[in-house]
Image 1 (cartoon, helix red, strand yellow):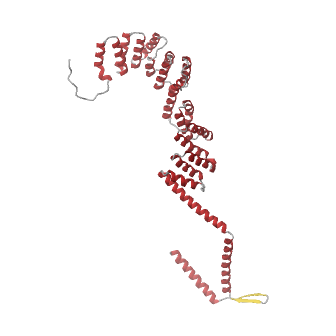
Image 2 (tube, rainbow, N blue to C red):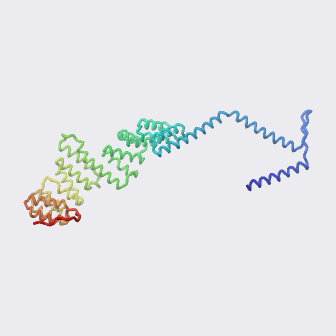
Image 3 (cartoon, rainbow, N blue to C red):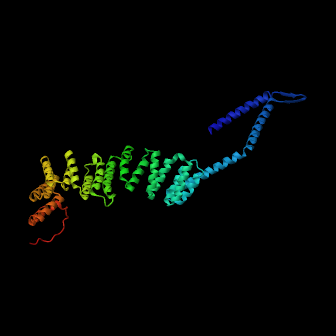
Length: 414
């Protein structure tokens, strides 16, 4: 409002000054050409020139616009098409977020045909088709996205691999991901999907080879790395025998299992689950002696209570020599409950029943475990010492049994 007032004031002042000038001296202009003369005042001439300029400018614009009707129509059609495209895109995205898959696929696929970013809308439409179980429609939309934006192959391929994995199409998914890994070897999403595919295919060897890259690219942390590495080697140990023909001889089984064990990294050689699985498998193929030698070497390198306990469950080539080896450890580790349990078991292998009872009792004193209690009870029962076994049960029942709730009990009868 203030600016308009100032403008009006300037206009009035200028008009008053111009009017005064015209009254004081209207001026005189004479134009002559051959025998024609035109006489007028200066101010009228200036007004005529101003009107002529305005008319000329208007005529030029009119002529210029008359030459471009097609361009205007095309521009109008383009703006109308863009507006319709934005409207379809908005409706499609809303339908997608609401789970209205059919509507989302229809609007987004239509919008993609006239969009400057078609790949994004084709991918969203493919998601809607996938959610409807329309596999052929999904693949067709993904192919359209590839044709429209070839440079987005990794993004489109990842979307397709995700759909394939969700459908359970593991082999095509693996082929797709291996191709994507060649295009983008450090892409974390490609590596993450590869991990999932190998897990579902139970391809443990391939997953073991992938683990360093998963760690290097930050796909998994140290704890996940340890868990996945343990799982891979546990499954590979079992798988190494399961895939062999039924008529495979014991020596071949031993060679295959030994190769799988040698592939276990050094930091997992003392893993309790791996050791137990390896020992059980060696026992199944009748190769306990070989397993006993492996465990003895591991214990010699570094003491481990769990390894010592597993050592006592294996039947070596020479039971007496195995017992002597364990006794040698006893001098350095006199208060190890696991070693006492192992000594008791190895004494039983050598038919040293009284000595075995002493070791079991000592182990139970150090650590009252159900397993030790069971070994002692079984041995006493087979030796016919039922009364001693009964007294042992009564005296130590509460030490090995779980805590029972307080409940009413009948009076004791004699």
